[in-house]
Amino acid sequence: MTDAAEDTATGESGGAVASGDDHAAADQGAGGDGDRDRRHDAGRVRHTAFSPETVAVFGRPAGVHGSFAQTSESTDRPAPEVSAPDPVLAEAFGRPSGETETLQRDPLAAYGEPGGAPSPPDPWRDPESVAAMSGPALARPTIAEPTESGPKLGIQDVLFGKRVSWHALATLAVLAVLVGVFGGLIGRWTAEVVSPLNSDSVQLSTGEQTNGDAKSPVAGVARAVEKSVVALDVRTSSSVGTGSGFVIDKGGYIVTNNHVIAMAANDRNAKLEAVFFDRKRVPARIVGRDTKTDLAVVKVDNVDNLTVSKLGNSDDLQIGQEVIAFGSPLGLDRTVTSGIVSALHRPVPLRPDAESDTDAVIDAIQTDAAINPGNSGGPLVDDEAQVVGINTAGLVPGGGSIGLGFAIPINQVVPIAQTLIRNGTVNHPQIGVNASSVRNDRVLGAQVRNVVAGGPADRAGVREDDVITSFDGRTIESADELTVAVRTAKIDGKVGFTYWRDGRTFSGTIMPASD
Image 1 (cartoon, rainbow, N blue to C red):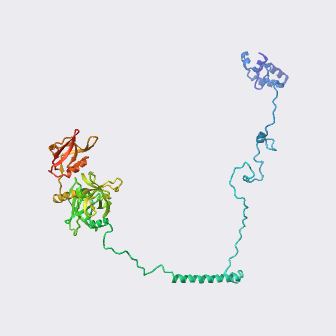
Image 2 (spheres, one colour):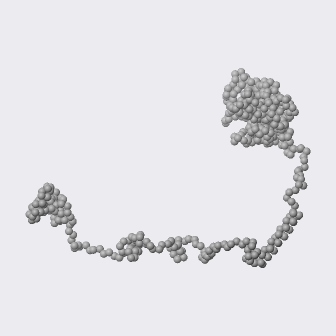
Image 3 (cartoon, rainbow, N blue to C red):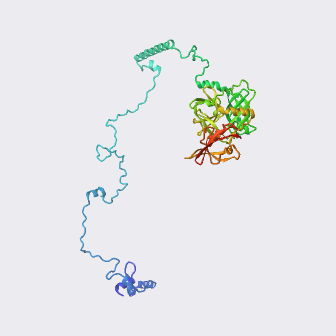
Protein backbone atom coordinates (compact mmCIF):
# COMPACT_ATOMS: atom_id res chain seq x y z
CA MET A 1 0.00 0.00 0.00
CA THR A 2 0.95 3.57 -0.43
CA ASP A 3 1.39 5.86 2.49
CA ALA A 4 -2.01 7.32 1.99
CA ALA A 5 -3.64 3.92 1.89
CA GLU A 6 -1.86 2.82 5.02
CA ASP A 7 -2.97 5.91 6.84
CA THR A 8 -6.59 5.35 5.82
CA ALA A 9 -6.62 1.67 6.64
CA THR A 10 -5.16 2.07 10.11
CA GLY A 11 -6.62 5.46 11.00
CA GLU A 12 -9.40 6.30 13.47
CA SER A 13 -11.53 9.44 13.65
CA GLY A 14 -9.39 12.52 13.84
CA GLY A 15 -6.08 11.09 12.42
CA ALA A 16 -3.91 8.01 11.53
CA VAL A 17 -3.21 5.15 13.96
CA ALA A 18 0.33 3.68 14.23
CA SER A 19 1.08 0.23 12.83
CA GLY A 20 1.83 -2.87 14.89
CA ASP A 21 5.60 -2.46 14.81
CA ASP A 22 5.35 1.03 16.08
CA HIS A 23 3.24 -0.23 19.01
CA ALA A 24 5.95 -2.72 19.88
CA ALA A 25 8.67 -0.16 19.80
CA ALA A 26 6.64 2.07 21.99
CA ASP A 27 6.05 -0.71 24.46
CA GLN A 28 9.72 -1.45 24.75
CA GLY A 29 10.61 2.13 25.29
CA ALA A 30 8.01 2.56 27.95
CA GLY A 31 9.31 -0.07 30.38
CA GLY A 32 6.65 -1.46 32.68
CA ASP A 33 3.93 0.41 30.88
CA GLY A 34 4.79 -1.50 27.77
CA ASP A 35 3.46 -4.72 29.24
CA ARG A 36 0.17 -3.05 30.18
CA ASP A 37 -0.16 -1.53 26.66
CA ARG A 38 0.58 -4.87 25.11
CA ARG A 39 -2.11 -6.50 27.16
CA HIS A 40 -4.52 -3.70 26.14
CA ASP A 41 -3.51 -3.89 22.48
CA ALA A 42 -3.99 -7.65 22.53
CA GLY A 43 -7.72 -7.08 22.89
CA ARG A 44 -7.98 -4.74 19.91
CA VAL A 45 -9.55 -5.89 16.64
CA ARG A 46 -7.22 -5.64 13.69
CA HIS A 47 -8.92 -4.12 10.57
CA THR A 48 -8.61 -5.92 7.26
CA ALA A 49 -6.48 -4.12 4.73
CA PHE A 50 -8.47 -2.22 2.07
CA SER A 51 -8.06 -2.90 -1.60
CA PRO A 52 -6.26 -0.35 -3.77
CA GLU A 53 -9.49 0.41 -5.63
CA THR A 54 -11.29 1.29 -2.40
CA VAL A 55 -8.38 3.39 -1.19
CA ALA A 56 -8.29 5.18 -4.54
CA VAL A 57 -11.98 6.13 -4.21
CA PHE A 58 -12.33 6.86 -0.50
CA GLY A 59 -8.77 7.65 0.65
CA ARG A 60 -7.26 11.10 1.30
CA PRO A 61 -5.65 12.81 -1.62
CA ALA A 62 -1.87 12.72 -1.80
CA GLY A 63 -0.19 15.11 0.59
CA VAL A 64 -3.28 15.55 2.82
CA HIS A 65 -2.88 14.22 6.34
CA GLY A 66 -5.73 15.99 8.12
CA SER A 67 -9.50 16.49 7.70
CA PHE A 68 -9.15 19.76 5.78
CA ALA A 69 -6.79 20.79 3.03
CA GLN A 70 -4.19 23.41 3.79
CA THR A 71 -5.04 26.81 2.30
CA SER A 72 -2.46 29.03 0.81
CA GLU A 73 -2.03 32.38 2.48
CA SER A 74 -1.44 34.08 -0.80
CA THR A 75 -4.21 34.42 -3.37
CA ASP A 76 -4.46 36.00 -6.72
CA ARG A 77 -7.96 37.45 -6.12
CA PRO A 78 -8.14 41.00 -4.71
CA ALA A 79 -9.73 41.37 -1.28
CA PRO A 80 -13.15 43.18 -1.29
CA GLU A 81 -13.30 46.61 0.21
CA VAL A 82 -16.31 47.46 2.43
CA SER A 83 -17.55 50.98 1.85
CA ALA A 84 -19.26 53.13 4.46
CA PRO A 85 -23.01 52.35 4.85
CA ASP A 86 -25.64 54.67 3.50
CA PRO A 87 -26.54 57.28 6.14
CA VAL A 88 -30.26 56.53 5.86
CA LEU A 89 -29.69 52.81 6.31
CA ALA A 90 -27.24 53.43 9.11
CA GLU A 91 -29.80 55.54 10.93
CA ALA A 92 -32.53 52.95 10.37
CA PHE A 93 -30.59 49.80 11.12
CA GLY A 94 -27.49 50.97 13.03
CA ARG A 95 -26.88 50.60 16.73
CA PRO A 96 -28.33 53.32 18.92
CA SER A 97 -25.91 55.86 20.26
CA GLY A 98 -24.00 54.39 23.16
CA GLU A 99 -24.89 50.79 22.19
CA THR A 100 -21.91 48.83 20.85
CA GLU A 101 -22.67 45.22 21.77
CA THR A 102 -26.06 44.48 20.18
CA LEU A 103 -28.77 45.98 17.99
CA GLN A 104 -31.46 45.04 20.51
CA ARG A 105 -32.01 47.28 23.46
CA ASP A 106 -32.26 45.63 26.80
CA PRO A 107 -35.95 45.83 27.85
CA LEU A 108 -34.82 46.27 31.46
CA ALA A 109 -32.55 49.16 30.59
CA ALA A 110 -35.48 51.61 31.00
CA TYR A 111 -36.35 50.28 34.46
CA GLY A 112 -36.65 53.16 36.89
CA GLU A 113 -36.84 55.84 34.22
CA PRO A 114 -39.82 58.19 34.49
CA GLY A 115 -42.57 57.34 32.00
CA GLY A 116 -45.75 59.04 30.85
CA ALA A 117 -48.42 59.14 28.19
CA PRO A 118 -47.20 60.31 24.81
CA SER A 119 -48.06 63.85 24.03
CA PRO A 120 -50.91 64.31 21.56
CA PRO A 121 -49.95 65.29 18.01
CA ASP A 122 -49.76 69.00 17.44
CA PRO A 123 -50.84 69.87 13.87
CA TRP A 124 -49.44 73.37 14.33
CA ARG A 125 -45.90 72.13 15.01
CA ASP A 126 -45.77 68.70 13.33
CA PRO A 127 -46.24 68.95 9.54
CA GLU A 128 -46.55 65.15 9.30
CA SER A 129 -49.52 64.94 11.67
CA VAL A 130 -53.00 63.99 10.42
CA ALA A 131 -55.61 66.72 10.21
CA ALA A 132 -58.02 66.61 13.17
CA MET A 133 -60.67 68.72 14.86
CA SER A 134 -59.53 70.66 17.87
CA GLY A 135 -61.11 72.86 20.47
CA PRO A 136 -61.14 76.63 20.25
CA ALA A 137 -58.04 78.50 21.28
CA LEU A 138 -59.58 79.81 24.47
CA ALA A 139 -58.23 79.76 27.92
CA ARG A 140 -59.81 77.15 30.14
CA PRO A 141 -61.61 78.69 33.11
CA THR A 142 -60.24 77.80 36.45
CA ILE A 143 -62.79 75.82 38.47
CA ALA A 144 -62.95 76.96 42.00
CA GLU A 145 -62.70 74.28 44.58
CA PRO A 146 -66.00 73.56 46.38
CA THR A 147 -66.49 75.19 49.72
CA GLU A 148 -68.32 73.70 52.62
CA SER A 149 -71.74 75.18 53.45
CA GLY A 150 -72.03 76.97 56.71
CA PRO A 151 -74.61 76.37 59.40
CA LYS A 152 -78.26 77.13 58.59
CA LEU A 153 -79.82 80.25 60.02
CA GLY A 154 -82.78 79.90 62.32
CA ILE A 155 -85.47 82.42 63.18
CA GLN A 156 -83.65 83.42 66.34
CA ASP A 157 -80.44 84.05 64.39
CA VAL A 158 -82.31 86.12 61.79
CA LEU A 159 -84.27 88.26 64.27
CA PHE A 160 -82.01 88.49 67.29
CA GLY A 161 -78.66 87.14 66.25
CA LYS A 162 -77.74 90.18 64.23
CA ARG A 163 -76.83 87.93 61.38
CA VAL A 164 -79.23 89.83 59.06
CA SER A 165 -79.45 93.58 58.97
CA TRP A 166 -82.59 95.40 60.12
CA HIS A 167 -82.95 96.98 56.73
CA ALA A 168 -83.24 93.57 55.07
CA LEU A 169 -85.78 92.43 57.66
CA ALA A 170 -87.88 95.51 57.07
CA THR A 171 -87.79 94.99 53.32
CA LEU A 172 -88.95 91.39 53.70
CA ALA A 173 -91.80 92.46 55.95
CA VAL A 174 -93.01 95.06 53.46
CA LEU A 175 -92.89 92.49 50.63
CA ALA A 176 -94.89 89.99 52.69
CA VAL A 177 -97.58 92.59 53.35
CA LEU A 178 -97.81 93.52 49.68
CA VAL A 179 -98.11 89.89 48.59
CA GLY A 180 -100.89 89.27 51.10
CA VAL A 181 -102.85 92.37 50.06
CA PHE A 182 -102.47 91.61 46.35
CA GLY A 183 -103.52 87.97 46.83
CA GLY A 184 -106.60 89.01 48.78
CA LEU A 185 -107.67 91.48 46.08
CA ILE A 186 -107.29 88.82 43.37
CA GLY A 187 -109.30 86.30 45.37
CA ARG A 188 -112.14 88.78 45.97
CA TRP A 189 -112.24 89.75 42.31
CA THR A 190 -112.35 86.11 41.23
CA ALA A 191 -115.16 85.31 43.63
CA GLU A 192 -117.33 88.32 42.75
CA VAL A 193 -116.60 89.03 39.07
CA VAL A 194 -115.67 85.67 37.41
CA SER A 195 -118.63 83.28 37.05
CA PRO A 196 -118.37 79.88 38.84
CA LEU A 197 -117.59 76.71 36.90
CA ASN A 198 -120.47 74.72 38.38
CA SER A 199 -124.11 75.75 38.28
CA ASP A 200 -127.52 74.24 39.06
CA SER A 201 -129.43 76.55 36.75
CA VAL A 202 -128.07 75.33 33.38
CA GLN A 203 -130.66 73.56 31.20
CA LEU A 204 -129.41 71.85 28.03
CA SER A 205 -131.74 72.55 25.13
CA THR A 206 -132.35 69.98 22.40
CA GLY A 207 -133.47 70.48 18.84
CA GLU A 208 -137.06 70.98 17.87
CA GLN A 209 -138.99 67.73 18.23
CA THR A 210 -140.03 66.32 14.86
CA ASN A 211 -143.35 64.76 14.07
CA GLY A 212 -141.83 61.41 13.17
CA ASP A 213 -141.10 62.11 9.51
CA ALA A 214 -138.24 60.14 7.94
CA LYS A 215 -134.97 61.95 7.42
CA SER A 216 -134.33 60.34 4.02
CA PRO A 217 -136.14 58.16 1.47
CA VAL A 218 -134.18 55.09 2.62
CA ALA A 219 -135.14 55.79 6.25
CA GLY A 220 -138.81 56.03 5.23
CA VAL A 221 -138.65 52.71 3.38
CA ALA A 222 -136.87 51.06 6.32
CA ARG A 223 -139.54 52.28 8.72
CA ALA A 224 -142.32 50.94 6.50
CA VAL A 225 -140.79 47.51 5.87
CA GLU A 226 -138.90 46.60 9.06
CA LYS A 227 -141.87 45.11 10.91
CA SER A 228 -142.61 42.63 8.12
CA VAL A 229 -139.07 41.24 8.03
CA VAL A 230 -138.10 38.28 10.23
CA ALA A 231 -134.88 36.46 11.02
CA LEU A 232 -134.95 32.66 10.75
CA ASP A 233 -132.72 30.68 13.13
CA VAL A 234 -132.02 27.01 12.49
CA ARG A 235 -130.29 25.03 15.22
CA THR A 236 -129.26 21.39 15.09
CA SER A 237 -127.15 19.29 17.41
CA SER A 238 -124.03 20.11 15.41
CA SER A 239 -124.58 23.42 13.62
CA VAL A 240 -126.40 26.75 13.61
CA GLY A 241 -127.70 28.71 10.62
CA THR A 242 -129.26 32.15 10.22
CA GLY A 243 -131.29 33.56 7.35
CA SER A 244 -134.11 35.96 6.67
CA GLY A 245 -137.69 36.03 5.41
CA PHE A 246 -140.74 38.29 5.21
CA VAL A 247 -144.44 37.92 5.96
CA ILE A 248 -146.69 37.51 2.91
CA ASP A 249 -150.00 36.71 4.65
CA LYS A 250 -151.70 37.51 7.96
CA GLY A 251 -152.17 33.79 8.53
CA GLY A 252 -148.47 33.65 9.49
CA TYR A 253 -146.98 32.59 6.14
CA ILE A 254 -143.39 33.66 5.58
CA VAL A 255 -141.47 33.24 2.32
CA THR A 256 -137.71 32.58 2.29
CA ASN A 257 -135.01 30.63 0.41
CA ASN A 258 -134.86 26.87 0.46
CA HIS A 259 -131.18 26.87 1.43
CA VAL A 260 -132.06 28.86 4.58
CA ILE A 261 -134.27 26.10 6.01
CA ALA A 262 -132.67 23.07 4.30
CA MET A 263 -130.99 21.89 7.52
CA ALA A 264 -134.28 22.00 9.39
CA ALA A 265 -136.02 20.08 6.58
CA ASN A 266 -133.39 17.33 6.57
CA ASP A 267 -133.08 16.98 10.36
CA ARG A 268 -136.21 16.10 12.33
CA ASN A 269 -134.58 17.20 15.58
CA ALA A 270 -133.66 20.64 14.24
CA LYS A 271 -135.25 23.71 15.81
CA LEU A 272 -136.61 26.43 13.51
CA GLU A 273 -137.61 29.81 14.95
CA ALA A 274 -138.78 33.12 13.48
CA VAL A 275 -137.47 36.22 15.25
CA PHE A 276 -139.53 39.39 14.69
CA PHE A 277 -138.37 43.02 14.81
CA ASP A 278 -139.20 43.27 18.54
CA ARG A 279 -136.95 40.24 19.31
CA LYS A 280 -139.94 37.99 19.87
CA ARG A 281 -139.12 34.36 19.04
CA VAL A 282 -141.81 32.08 17.64
CA PRO A 283 -141.51 28.45 16.49
CA ALA A 284 -141.93 28.02 12.74
CA ARG A 285 -142.97 25.04 10.59
CA ILE A 286 -142.05 24.30 6.99
CA VAL A 287 -145.08 24.48 4.66
CA GLY A 288 -143.24 23.51 1.49
CA ARG A 289 -139.98 24.03 -0.34
CA ASP A 290 -138.66 23.83 -3.88
CA THR A 291 -135.02 22.93 -4.54
CA LYS A 292 -135.18 23.85 -8.25
CA THR A 293 -136.11 27.49 -7.60
CA ASP A 294 -134.56 27.82 -4.10
CA LEU A 295 -137.83 29.00 -2.58
CA ALA A 296 -139.64 27.89 0.59
CA VAL A 297 -142.58 28.89 2.75
CA VAL A 298 -142.75 28.56 6.56
CA LYS A 299 -145.59 29.34 8.94
CA VAL A 300 -145.86 30.72 12.46
CA ASP A 301 -148.95 30.36 14.65
CA ASN A 302 -150.61 32.47 17.34
CA VAL A 303 -148.92 35.73 16.38
CA ASP A 304 -151.19 38.77 16.39
CA ASN A 305 -150.89 42.01 14.47
CA LEU A 306 -148.57 40.71 11.79
CA THR A 307 -147.33 43.31 9.30
CA VAL A 308 -147.66 41.94 5.77
CA SER A 309 -145.19 42.98 3.10
CA LYS A 310 -146.44 44.95 0.12
CA LEU A 311 -145.47 43.11 -3.08
CA GLY A 312 -144.43 45.03 -6.17
CA ASN A 313 -143.90 44.24 -9.86
CA SER A 314 -140.40 43.08 -10.75
CA ASP A 315 -141.15 43.35 -14.49
CA ASP A 316 -141.20 47.16 -14.13
CA LEU A 317 -137.68 47.36 -12.71
CA GLN A 318 -135.13 49.46 -14.54
CA ILE A 319 -131.37 49.24 -14.44
CA GLY A 320 -130.07 52.00 -12.17
CA GLN A 321 -133.23 52.10 -10.05
CA GLU A 322 -132.65 52.45 -6.31
CA VAL A 323 -133.36 49.39 -4.13
CA ILE A 324 -132.96 48.52 -0.44
CA ALA A 325 -132.01 45.08 0.94
CA PHE A 326 -133.23 43.83 4.35
CA GLY A 327 -131.95 40.86 6.32
CA SER A 328 -129.66 39.47 8.98
CA PRO A 329 -126.18 39.30 7.46
CA LEU A 330 -123.79 37.27 9.63
CA GLY A 331 -126.48 37.08 12.30
CA LEU A 332 -126.89 40.87 12.57
CA ASP A 333 -130.67 41.13 12.42
CA ARG A 334 -132.60 44.23 11.23
CA THR A 335 -129.81 45.27 8.86
CA VAL A 336 -130.56 47.58 5.94
CA THR A 337 -128.33 48.21 2.91
CA SER A 338 -129.07 50.27 -0.17
CA GLY A 339 -127.92 50.29 -3.77
CA ILE A 340 -129.23 50.15 -7.31
CA VAL A 341 -130.37 47.56 -9.81
CA SER A 342 -127.16 46.65 -11.63
CA ALA A 343 -128.59 44.19 -14.17
CA LEU A 344 -131.71 42.15 -14.97
CA HIS A 345 -132.26 38.54 -16.07
CA ARG A 346 -128.85 37.40 -14.87
CA PRO A 347 -128.72 33.55 -14.84
CA VAL A 348 -127.07 32.44 -11.58
CA PRO A 349 -126.53 28.73 -10.80
CA LEU A 350 -126.96 27.53 -7.20
CA ARG A 351 -125.38 24.15 -6.52
CA PRO A 352 -125.88 21.72 -3.60
CA ASP A 353 -123.42 21.72 -0.73
CA ALA A 354 -122.99 20.19 2.71
CA GLU A 355 -125.77 22.33 4.22
CA SER A 356 -128.24 22.68 1.34
CA ASP A 357 -129.80 20.47 -1.33
CA THR A 358 -130.65 23.41 -3.59
CA ASP A 359 -129.92 22.73 -7.28
CA ALA A 360 -131.29 25.69 -9.16
CA VAL A 361 -130.59 28.35 -11.75
CA ILE A 362 -132.31 31.63 -10.92
CA ASP A 363 -133.23 34.43 -13.32
CA ALA A 364 -131.74 37.00 -10.95
CA ILE A 365 -131.90 40.73 -10.34
CA GLN A 366 -128.32 41.90 -9.89
CA THR A 367 -127.74 44.66 -7.33
CA ASP A 368 -124.82 46.39 -5.66
CA ALA A 369 -126.70 46.63 -2.35
CA ALA A 370 -124.54 44.70 0.13
CA ILE A 371 -125.76 41.09 0.39
CA ASN A 372 -123.83 38.80 2.74
CA PRO A 373 -124.50 35.35 4.26
CA GLY A 374 -127.64 35.80 6.39
CA ASN A 375 -129.32 38.20 3.96
CA SER A 376 -130.75 35.21 2.08
CA GLY A 377 -134.55 35.16 2.11
CA GLY A 378 -134.90 38.84 3.01
CA PRO A 379 -136.84 41.27 0.82
CA LEU A 380 -135.34 43.52 -1.83
CA VAL A 381 -137.66 46.57 -2.01
CA ASP A 382 -137.93 49.62 -4.23
CA ASP A 383 -138.21 53.26 -3.16
CA GLU A 384 -141.96 52.81 -2.64
CA ALA A 385 -141.42 50.10 0.00
CA GLN A 386 -142.69 47.38 -2.35
CA VAL A 387 -140.94 44.00 -2.44
CA VAL A 388 -139.46 43.38 -5.90
CA GLY A 389 -137.28 40.36 -5.10
CA ILE A 390 -135.86 37.92 -2.55
CA ASN A 391 -132.17 38.31 -1.64
CA THR A 392 -130.68 34.94 -2.54
CA ALA A 393 -126.97 34.96 -3.30
CA GLY A 394 -123.87 37.10 -3.39
CA LEU A 395 -120.37 36.72 -4.71
CA VAL A 396 -118.17 36.96 -1.63
CA PRO A 397 -114.69 35.66 -2.59
CA GLY A 398 -113.03 37.55 0.25
CA GLY A 399 -115.67 36.78 2.87
CA GLY A 400 -117.70 39.98 2.40
CA SER A 401 -119.84 41.80 -0.12
CA ILE A 402 -118.11 43.13 -3.25
CA GLY A 403 -121.23 44.72 -4.77
CA LEU A 404 -122.43 41.63 -6.64
CA GLY A 405 -125.70 40.48 -5.08
CA PHE A 406 -128.53 38.54 -6.69
CA ALA A 407 -132.27 38.34 -5.92
CA ILE A 408 -135.11 36.22 -7.31
CA PRO A 409 -137.71 38.50 -8.98
CA ILE A 410 -140.94 38.70 -6.98
CA ASN A 411 -143.04 37.92 -10.07
CA GLN A 412 -141.40 34.46 -10.12
CA VAL A 413 -141.75 34.06 -6.36
CA VAL A 414 -145.52 34.64 -6.12
CA PRO A 415 -146.72 31.64 -8.20
CA ILE A 416 -144.22 29.31 -6.53
CA ALA A 417 -145.21 30.50 -3.04
CA GLN A 418 -148.92 30.16 -3.80
CA THR A 419 -148.41 26.64 -5.13
CA LEU A 420 -146.36 25.65 -2.07
CA ILE A 421 -149.05 27.01 0.28
CA ARG A 422 -151.73 25.19 -1.69
CA ASN A 423 -150.01 21.85 -2.45
CA GLY A 424 -146.67 21.79 -0.61
CA THR A 425 -144.85 20.91 -3.86
CA VAL A 426 -144.25 22.49 -7.27
CA ASN A 427 -144.08 21.04 -10.78
CA HIS A 428 -141.74 22.61 -13.32
CA PRO A 429 -141.72 22.67 -17.12
CA GLN A 430 -139.04 20.66 -18.93
CA ILE A 431 -138.23 19.76 -22.55
CA GLY A 432 -136.30 16.52 -22.05
CA VAL A 433 -132.73 17.49 -22.96
CA ASN A 434 -129.36 17.86 -21.28
CA ALA A 435 -127.22 20.68 -22.62
CA SER A 436 -123.85 22.35 -22.14
CA SER A 437 -122.59 25.79 -23.08
CA VAL A 438 -120.79 26.17 -26.39
CA ARG A 439 -118.83 29.20 -27.60
CA ASN A 440 -116.81 29.13 -30.79
CA ASP A 441 -116.36 31.05 -34.02
CA ARG A 442 -119.39 29.35 -35.58
CA VAL A 443 -122.11 29.39 -32.93
CA LEU A 444 -122.95 30.55 -29.41
CA GLY A 445 -125.62 28.85 -27.30
CA ALA A 446 -126.66 25.65 -25.48
CA GLN A 447 -125.54 22.46 -27.22
CA VAL A 448 -127.82 19.44 -26.79
CA ARG A 449 -125.90 16.48 -25.37
CA ASN A 450 -128.75 13.97 -25.26
CA VAL A 451 -132.46 13.91 -25.98
CA VAL A 452 -135.03 11.97 -23.94
CA ALA A 453 -136.90 9.65 -26.25
CA GLY A 454 -140.52 10.70 -26.64
CA GLY A 455 -139.95 13.98 -24.77
CA PRO A 456 -140.94 17.47 -25.93
CA ALA A 457 -137.60 18.10 -27.67
CA ASP A 458 -137.71 14.72 -29.41
CA ARG A 459 -141.19 15.43 -30.68
CA ALA A 460 -140.04 18.88 -31.86
CA GLY A 461 -137.26 17.33 -33.96
CA VAL A 462 -134.30 18.32 -31.83
CA ARG A 463 -131.25 16.06 -32.22
CA GLU A 464 -128.02 15.61 -30.32
CA ASP A 465 -125.35 18.26 -31.06
CA ASP A 466 -127.99 20.80 -32.07
CA VAL A 467 -127.30 24.21 -30.55
CA ILE A 468 -130.34 26.07 -29.20
CA THR A 469 -129.78 29.80 -29.73
CA SER A 470 -133.15 31.23 -28.61
CA PHE A 471 -136.15 30.04 -26.57
CA ASP A 472 -139.48 31.78 -26.05
CA GLY A 473 -138.07 35.02 -27.48
CA ARG A 474 -135.03 34.98 -25.17
CA THR A 475 -131.49 34.82 -26.59
CA ILE A 476 -129.68 31.73 -25.32
CA GLU A 477 -125.89 32.02 -24.89
CA SER A 478 -125.32 29.30 -22.28
CA ALA A 479 -126.85 26.17 -20.79
CA ASP A 480 -127.86 28.12 -17.64
CA GLU A 481 -129.86 30.58 -19.75
CA LEU A 482 -131.69 27.70 -21.42
CA THR A 483 -132.56 26.26 -17.99
CA VAL A 484 -133.95 29.61 -16.84
CA ALA A 485 -135.93 30.10 -20.06
CA VAL A 486 -137.50 26.63 -19.86
CA ARG A 487 -138.45 26.92 -16.17
CA THR A 488 -140.13 30.29 -16.68
CA ALA A 489 -142.28 28.91 -19.54
CA LYS A 490 -145.76 27.47 -19.08
CA ILE A 491 -146.42 23.76 -18.93
CA ASP A 492 -148.22 22.49 -22.07
CA GLY A 493 -147.89 25.89 -23.74
CA LYS A 494 -146.39 26.23 -27.23
CA VAL A 495 -143.03 27.98 -27.21
CA GLY A 496 -141.05 29.10 -30.25
CA PHE A 497 -137.33 28.38 -30.40
CA THR A 498 -134.42 28.38 -32.88
CA TYR A 499 -131.48 26.02 -33.14
CA TRP A 500 -128.29 25.64 -35.19
CA ARG A 501 -127.37 22.45 -37.03
CA ASP A 502 -124.47 21.88 -39.43
CA GLY A 503 -124.03 25.56 -40.19
CA ARG A 504 -127.74 26.25 -40.74
CA THR A 505 -130.34 27.82 -38.43
CA PHE A 506 -133.81 26.28 -38.02
CA SER A 507 -136.96 27.47 -36.22
CA GLY A 508 -139.64 25.41 -34.54
CA THR A 509 -142.15 25.17 -31.70
CA ILE A 510 -141.98 23.05 -28.59
CA MET A 511 -144.47 22.26 -25.83
CA PRO A 512 -142.79 21.98 -22.37
CA ALA A 513 -144.09 19.18 -20.18
CA SER A 514 -144.22 18.82 -16.39
CA ASP A 515 -141.32 17.25 -14.62
